[in-house]
Image 1 (cartoon, rainbow, N blue to C red):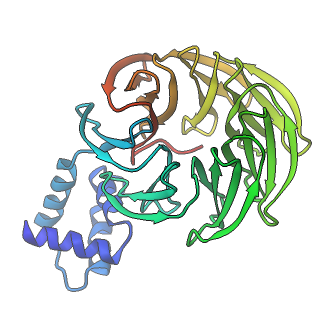
Image 2 (image 1 turned 60 degrees about the vertical axis):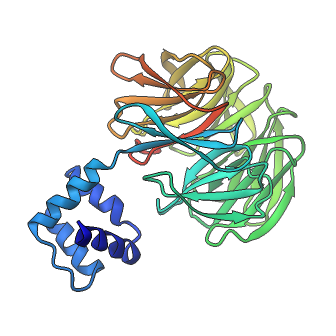
Length: 361
């Protein structure tokens, strides 16, 4: 065991993706031969036998896959064992952790602590805290541009959008936006960041190259989640104060359609097939599935407790949802569209993540 641990530690130092690679081997995504080449190239002088390969796979399988949940109302994260669907520990993280996302290389999971003015970097496989970046002012919602050049932090409390360098998180510019910016999304060419303004009922377009607000348009009540269609033609906006998703031609700043949903349409998640997306409806306690080609609702799932953020397992079999108002994570079986488990967590659970998730498309 000591040799295996030493190998794993040294491999991690030499390669950012060693854990992900081992997981893929054990799930038969890549071959044993590739593993041998990988280890030989990553750890000089280490002879990996068939026994070692099996031992590493057994150790990886034995380590439980976890879900990370942000409890925004109490400043903690819940670590949930996915197999048993139970919370195994709760870790203090900082003040008001609302949203989270993986870095583009999947090496870290970033948690945005809005009231602590910091980003916390976790191991995406275990939830272990690795490092912090302080003086990131009021990071509520966050995102990397598709080209990875820009990191955008939406400062909900301070009425700003802050643009950072996507590589080193150095501040480039703070942009005053007006009242209560909420969520952000990017066009495919990384030219624009579109930001919803939840208290002034607007959508604004921020040009990334110049770091300026180029346009703004009125929307329905309390716009929130932002989602671009696969062809980049339209942007979909969840209207939390309404019962629809607004379909907007963002180049002309014109609304072209309202997709009727449950009340409180809020946030989006892809089903991973490039065709359909979920939208959570916090007031009606439902989740709709929208076909992006027809721009219509094709299915509805009942999810109690104010469904908010979502995560879908890689195989598409389970949808995990933070039920914001009842301190639980709700698990839905996608074959039956029925709730199969509710997992107690902390106060006001918001963001949720696990490593083996469906594709973000």
